[in-house]
Length: 345
Ligand code: NDP
Picture 1 (cartoon, rainbow, N blue to C red):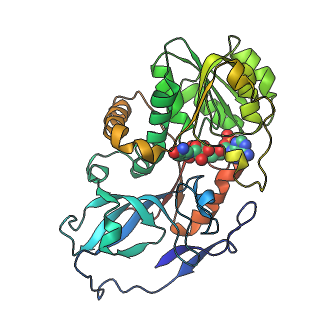
Picture 2: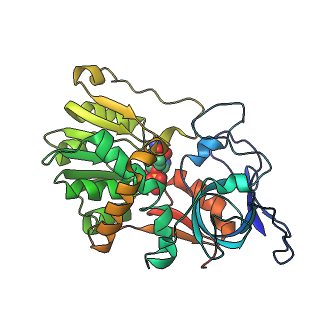
Picture 3: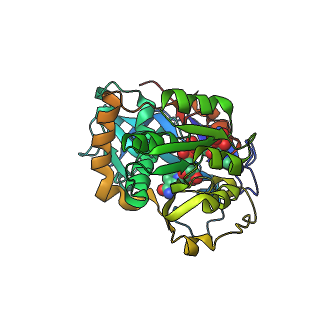
């Protein structure tokens, strides 16, 4: 049974084999005895996400999501199938979604099963399984909550989305387009630009690594930006503040450029928040799941089925590839939502 272990707290970019290690252990599934309430799951897909870097910290430091336990399997959103059950809420063969340990098989105590939901549509709906941890999972809900609740989009407005081809960004852009906005994206790779322009209907995209951000925003958003969907932070935020219109909204989703730095980069023009009456609002998607979760799943599932939303998953096959897939997020290696396919069924 292969597991992915959090082995050391990193400074800077984590390394495979030092901070995250692949470990094999024996698990005899046939002779395994479950206590009342327990289940045994086989992992099918696992999501790797930027926030996991924040969980790779010393447990004494508090944050919104718990630190990973040293020496134990890491965990994250995933879909698994129930292989054995001693719990009335789960049947053998059920597909479950929620926080899943990074292991091929896991014997879960009753307490852990409480954070899992049965989502048999993932088994029965004939959409790609990775979609359930991406466009129809946590990142998709992040796009939905961030845009609608905190972006308050209005037809004719202009939105700029940073890290635009990723798990969250590609959906934000397509939802905004459907609301009649002018949609600008920024990415760190030309093939990502081409995808957004040709397949996701973005109006303009630039490569922040090879092009000057200020010049590109002047060119692509000559009337300024009304919404900046913040995924990156640092210099991107500074440029967004400079190009924002009065009363702009900045749904502040993440700042990935800062996650591996020991000291955050300064942003020099924060006074624009006052001068331009910008609403810069941070949010954590989990806080809004109760309120917006089912509306999100219903609407976005229908948009996918109707061909109104397209979504690119970047699938790594085999759990051994998980550490590289996770670290690759901070180097822009993923093209689309980074997902690890652990087993087919
Ligand atoms: P992505 O799928 O977009 O993957 C990360 C991408 O970020 C990379 O592919 C890369 O794209 C870009 N990137 C990485 N490092 C840098 C850097 N130093 N400067 C600029 N860009 C960089 O990730 P997600 O869509 O899953 O997440 C996007 C953001 O949303 C993150 O900040 C994440 O933390 C946040 N988030 C917040 C949630 C919340 O509840 N608030 C929930 C989910 C995500 P490129 O090649 O284009 O540079």
